[in-house]
Image (cartoon, rainbow, N blue to C red; front, side, top):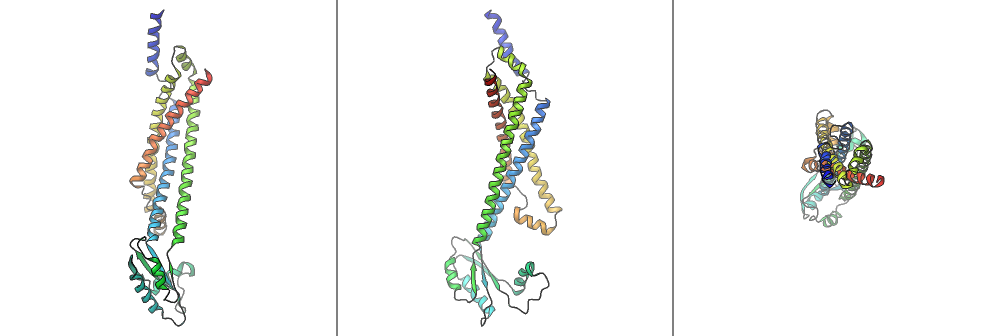
Length: 312
């Protein structure tokens, strides 16, 4: 009897490898590949959007931090042009300042057009003037000294744009956190879908699982078969979804550059750059693929082991 059992165990142990429990080209397998591809695409788009916003926020903060503005209001008895020259001289003498430029009267009037409208005659009134001060390194610039020096110029105030930087950082941080939350929800939805798919596959192949148990196959062996098959499914779906996500950003960038009007395209460029993910964004989307594949394999293995434990 011992001699008869050994050949049967050898034949049974090799059968699952030649005839997998979850066929690669089954309807369930193709559906799961499509589902994982969609989830990977959504994850890649979300992650890419977070990368774009974060890169733009860093660029915004850097640009705003390297520039301060001196505003000179009209004061009775003061000569505006003289105050402008004094402010420019004081700014140029401040350590850390690399360039200083006073806006012309025409440039100052142009800044008021969005609020007053074009074609308004402002010659009858005296409007405030601005001096743009560029900093080499904001940390090395002696801003307190410039503020003290400007106290001698009547009507002059210094704006360091600190409030704008704080608002930009808060907005960018909110968008990033929201994106990560959406990414977490996508991952949870993917896990739940894999669990239902695995349970459905187990239910449809219950007879095969019972036969494997009957011939002595362990729960670990059966779970390993499911893990390997679902790992392959997860990797293929992840690759398709990752490629689609990269193609999406390429298509959006091309569309925004060619079909969107120049003004709207410029505004979008300010907000999101040029929809160029860069190397870091592409690497981030590529990293989603093995993560999704590993998540698929681990989830299926744990689901199978739990299912077998409950039914044994």
